[in-house]
Length: 273
Ligand SMILES: NC(=O)c1ccc[n+]([C@@H]2O[C@H](COP(=O)([O-])OP(=O)(O)OC[C@H]3O[C@@H](n4cnc5c(N)ncnc54)[C@H](O)[C@@H]3O)[C@@H](O)[C@H]2O)c1
Image (tube, rainbow, N blue to C red; front, side, top):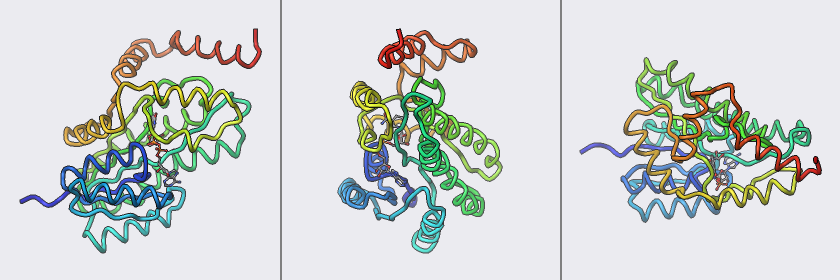
């Protein structure tokens, strides 16, 4: 009999994080639901337990705190004797016209969406090296590949996550440590609750975009579990976004027409004729 896979997921109290926790729970995994939102995280723990998890526990973990990650490392070492998968999923939304994104909003965004992933990888790399095995799953976004207008701080953070993941996929491979970057396009979650923007149009646009997806968080979570099983380094769950990425790779210097059309629409909404 093989032992259950041991997984820690940041931001597992909601959306994609919860969906991944349940996807691994259905496969009998041991799961840490790590989040700042205790009530929702405890709901995720209960759902994991009824879905077949071998174990499911909540750890209060803020991805902006390195000591919180260190405490989680100590917890898994003491209670489970190690860990197989770290999923760096916790994230927030932000954007608006470029000149309106304040330095404070840049720092907030980069501290959570980029440095939160750096911390999750850095703290667990030593354990993974000792184990001579481990898997990082870093939730980036198509925004980090396609760079849509009026999302500068979000795009930069997610592009950083993709760069970090590709770096680690090579650098840590001698220790049998794999790194998967996941780049979804929009899908329905509670992400809009975290949105920080100076621009009222951004909130309405985000709500519309989140609702526009033809695939769900559960579909993406199943795809992620399969991509981990296949040893992939990059997973793009949305087919249309995959096609946009293929077109961009063929013509890397050309800004896609739909981005320019969207930028003109935003400019018109700001009163530019
Ligand atoms: N929903 C989308 O359309 C979409 C698209 C591409 C990428 N993503 C990415 O997917 C990931 C999950 O987001 P989601 O859409 O499920 O959103 P969500 O808001 O439903 O879930 C995010 C979770 O992260 C937690 N969180 C926020 N800040 C945290 C912190 N500092 N420390 C620990 N936990 C924190 C929240 O409490 C929440 O439980 C994010 O990285 C997001 O950028 C989402």
